[in-house]
Length: 434
Image (cartoon, rainbow, N blue to C red; front, side, top):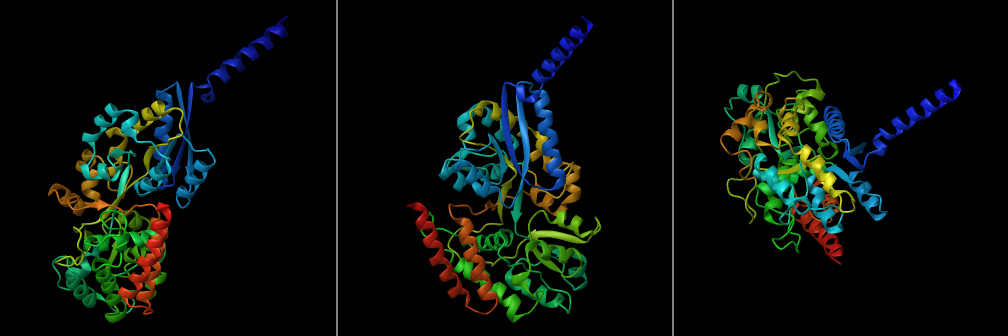
């Protein structure tokens, strides 16, 4: 009898354990997070576990995915009917994913909830996460590209009281500071997309664009882009103020070299301080951030941009999710100021946050005094534009990289290189409209 009672109690205990398992929750959601920094990955996972504890009827199954293959994996999963309920990825993916029907507009799932979020966010960043009048993403931070990162001490010792603001000033400063083993400015021009993002930012700052206003014609061979390429060619070939092997130097290597005191300036993204940490440079390394130099009068016909930006590691809800209402509860949890403010430096360092309150934290002011000064003046996002994004942009950026390298290596003239790029990219854009 005692043996039977023991067996009964074991069975009951196992049953209770099974019933309390997350797998027995009323709703199970799957989340794919694209890889970020280790602290960000740990923070997002920790907060996801907190959400699960606060919502006993919902369980979010979290998994970390490779950043490099995020788009390919999502599109492949969509084709096979294997999408998760939630994805954390970047805003430049939005146009392509909307065209394919992969993601759902959040404001159509719960318009009142989305309206509640909006006042917390920087308006320009809210627009970056939106497309065709709908919000598709709750972002966690933005990457702004490019900034001119410069060595304050080196410029001051050379007699310059401020960073260069025009092409002419950039050439002058770079010539004055360049010496054997020390670049006046470090440039990156490999085929990785981060290198192309900096180039796109300079093109947009000079009134250039990828596409015409109606999105039908590729215009990357216009004066706004050609003059930027001419500047790069002059810096590399005419004035010889860059490091050797620009076409073999990627964004990360160039910025690391700056923080290893191998150059006076570098074109970098807003998260330069993360690379300072990776390079082992001290907290008080004498660097500043400024808008990238630009022509006094833009060559292109479009409005100039201070930089282009992408909203990163934002929460998307997939179109195939059977539990969109429950997924919106996770999006609502993630959209809170309590969750997002730490990207201002309180927990996550080196990033540009998305909610207004994060810019006023002591941590952000200390980490990025130059960006904070621009924020207080209302200039940080005043002329910023979303990072270029359209169906086929990945292939087009590869063509742009080929054009950039051909000109920097002296194989083609800038106009010729970009004319060829335009033709190749027009074929890509036209083929995807069929």
